[in-house]
Image (cartoon, rainbow, N blue to C red; front, side, top):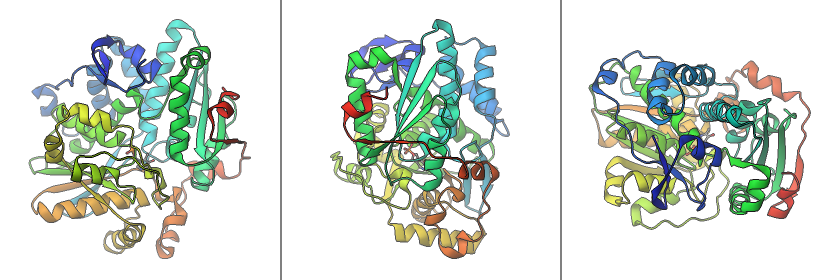
Length: 429
Ligand SMILES: *Cc1c(COP(=O)(O)O)cnc(C)c1O
């Protein structure tokens, strides 16, 4: 599979070029030159198929020309050494738990796979790389953990000071070694803008071997396709109409789901569930995309005012708004509704949602009102123990803190405070 820039349909890039560069030379996003279809035989075998077997089949479509089977299987086995587990909450609703990785959020899928793949490509040409990543919380921790101690790769994480949860901050700032944490005096959008500015500066970018680990990197997106297949592999009601609700911020997760559908996965349609940061809701309603500053909510990893994957969604649908609307419905929910949903799911099903999963749960319930016979799946993108402050008190007291989270709490925070200006960031690259 070759890759191309969204802006330029002619020039093609190898997977290695697309992954190592992160962004195309014209500053826009890489996309696969076409979306591969998986054969009928694969779908006949899907029921019960493991995450690693699915991962190999899906990743082979994108990277098979450049990684021999044995190497690709090695990458997948090391990156996906935990499952995406589907649990039924009631007759109609299942939750896909994506938090069984080392930092307890779904971004482990993307970050670990990317670390393995970059490490693989880098060993071929022995250059060094600096990963520059902006985070609203979970990306930074997943990337820091995934790349920790990977030889020849330095990681610089930009996060908005005071706007991520204390546990997320511990996960980013306590590793040290090849991981540096810059605490930016600004919002997540400032962090994302600084990353974009750094990439636009081609001299800087070449000098330090800059690459990106945000969901703008295509290698983050591909492993997120795996778990949509894995969800259906565990669903007994495969014949029903299936609706999947995705809690969305930068829309990488939803983009991966839409790619899975175009690869042939029988998902009827998607719900893009957002918090008060609802530019996508406005976009689908009016056809106009108006980015704006993000506002702080309980589901802080979705506090994004300028979702970077929107151009990829438009590309997948040939810029046809009507086609996007046919596959995606979208809603926005307030913090109050989010907390009420957490209380409700706990009372009804004894299930503890995190605030991001709760937004997806709300979106799914809205969609199921219109599709009474459908089977619904919502994605639980983080473990609730990562966001204790956001849970209602009676639910909070029931959360068990997993050990891989507590290990971070006693470590010393090491971060550098910087103003939201590129000249400040450059000093640390
Ligand atoms: C990043 C994140 C999201 C949003 O995912 P996008 O791919 O940016 O839309 C949702 N939930 C959690 C817990 C996250 O960390």
